[in-house]
Length: 182
Image (tube, rainbow, N blue to C red):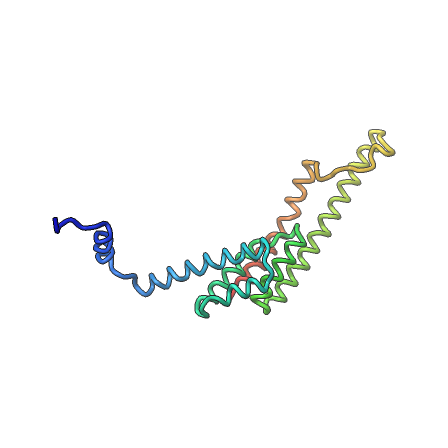
């Protein structure tokens, strides 16, 4: 009967056979853990936190982990930047600048790009609305019947918007990469 081992003893024996992690494996595992923590902090910030909450949470970790966590947070926040949502952009920018104040110039470039995009969207919308009204006018439809044309429901509008967004998205991608550089 002395040869029967408990599950705990069997697990301990298997673990002993596996050996310890190398220094590189430990570093990689710690880095992976820090990235997961950074992603979770970024998601909580985006959902409801203030920048001070993010800073307080980050300060709970040792300084050697803090850098990796902060880089991950900045990268996660940078990926959420959307030129179509000015409010979300401002929230994201505040979070990034809390952790990386030296990114002010890049954030300002993204802000200008967002404004440029919004202007291009308005201009395209006005042009399409004018084309729609002109087409209706040619069909002899006028007056209150054409007061409000919903260009956004138009398939041509969706295609134009995608084409319009492409060069802006390319520029945004480059600026996001710049934000994430150490």
